[in-house]
Amino acid sequence: MTRQRPYPSDLSDARWELIGPTLTAWRAERGGKSLDIGRRPEHDLRRIMDAILYVDRTGIPWRYLPHDFAPWATVYGYFATWQREGVFYRLNGLLRRLVREAEGRDAEPSACVLDAQSIKTSANVPATGQGIDAGKKIPGRKRHIGVDTLGLLLAVWVTAASVSDNIGGIHLLSQISAATPQVTKAWADTGYRTKVIDHGARLGIDVEVIQRDPGVKEFKVIPRRWVVERTFGWLMHHRRLARDYETHPHRSEAIIHVAMIDLMSRRLTSESTPNWRDT
Image 1: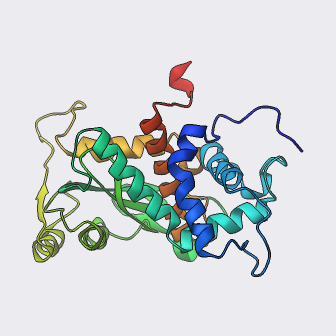
Image 2: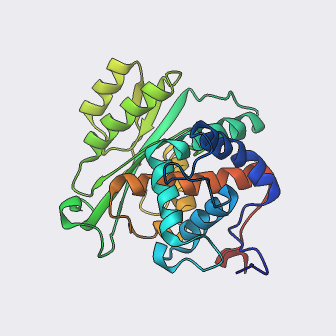
Image 3: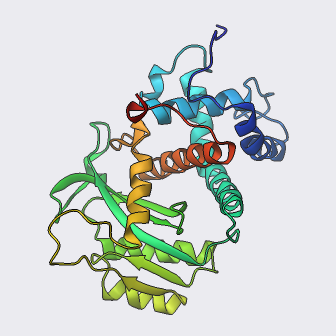
């Protein structure tokens, strides 16, 4: 079936110029083969990425993909393979560096902000992979993220909601230190305590806890912490992230990477997708 009009989530030519070389290089590394060993590729990589972005933006199940995309099992196969082989991670790093340079910043950050978000899950998430956030009383999973001072993703770890912010913070700092050794400063909220601060010190990262003013009852933007809160807000524009629908937590991390790839590629090409705030 030939599509008459592109979907709002589809890659423009300008965005494909940013993303395409990485996917083309990935296929070249495989000797031009499809996911089935020995077969020539049947599907255009741009259309595959369009389908993944469609799921990420609309939140539909994989099996409900419109028929003008490749078969859903093929699309999910590429999604799972790109997650497993680190393609989304590489794209996220590439686009983050380009955005930072476009903003007049160094390509690699020297500081980060940590936070976590507890989110409810769908029925297809195994009970063994869930928990209850004791503080927020939310059953489900928790997204631990570290971002740079522009709010761009540096590290993500998805766990059961019962995993403490301390454990999540230690894991994030280890990820960030290994991938971005230039980072020497981190800001976090009061959920990140002594263990995170001590672990950061061992990695050469000064972790500063930003306290909320106890005398202020109304809403007030908290220095530094607002950056990562805004990132969570950006992610919520992608309906696939309104809940955690992924059976495996590493697939949840991939969906977050896809959302950030979508966001950063649009930022670099000055494009946007209408939402209810634009109506």
